[in-house]
Amino acid sequence: MTMPWAQLAVREALVLPLLLIGVAAGGGFRSGVTDGAWRFLPPTPMALVLGVLLVGVLVRTGVLAPWTLVGPHRHGLANANGAMLLATLLLASSQVFTALSPESGLLQVLASVFFLLLLVNTLAAQPTRARAMQSLGVVLLSAFVLKYVILDALYAPEGSLARKVVTTLLEGVSLGALGYTSHGAATAYVAFLVVLLYLFALVLLPGDDDDRVGPVLRTGRDGRLGEPALPRAEPARPRGEPSLPGETSLPALTGARASGAPAARPDPADH
Image 1: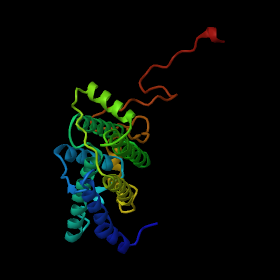
Image 2: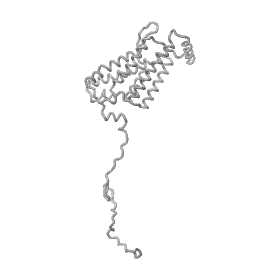
Image 3: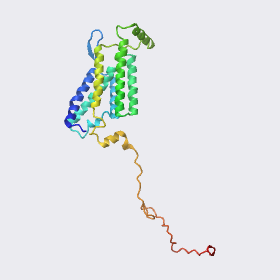
């Protein structure tokens, strides 16, 4: 069922921008462990690259149909709103990686490489929209658990003897290059809310199954327009009729003898 125009306008001009702006602001939120001081981190250059790749994955898998937001079928104000929504989506996607990646050290490099390989593999595989959403949700929640549950527990200022042993082993293996900094409890809650809001915003995005997507754009995305055309069957021609102006027709074979040819004499042995 087609969504009314008023609901579409409210979703694209109010709901989605507010959700994505909240994700972009919350992704850079950090609180201190001891003093509880608040600070906000901007996206790093690597986070921006990962954000661009994530938006490309959303477009390729059908989660986002950008031609429904910007195109010649929309007016100037609608195109400006669509362009602003795409820019906000890029910033929010980058800040999601900022929230789920360590700020420095070897762990930040490992997390960036992991996200990069995962996004490139998803671009090559091109899963369906449902599978892409499920995979993205699992990856984001797993990264949240790894950073804010496991690493924060290991690097907390106070903890058990097992935490100290594991921390010492990790530092020995990496030659002290991990350099992880734990965060306050408020950072984990905000990061969890950021992941949920981002996934909810992706559900609200105009996707490839939207009713406003034209058949030409839909088939162009699936690649069916680039398939070679099958040879068209030509209609049957009467025998002896030339098909092209330069062709010569073959003589029709009939039971009557050709004119001018001598008649065959009957063989007496046939009787």
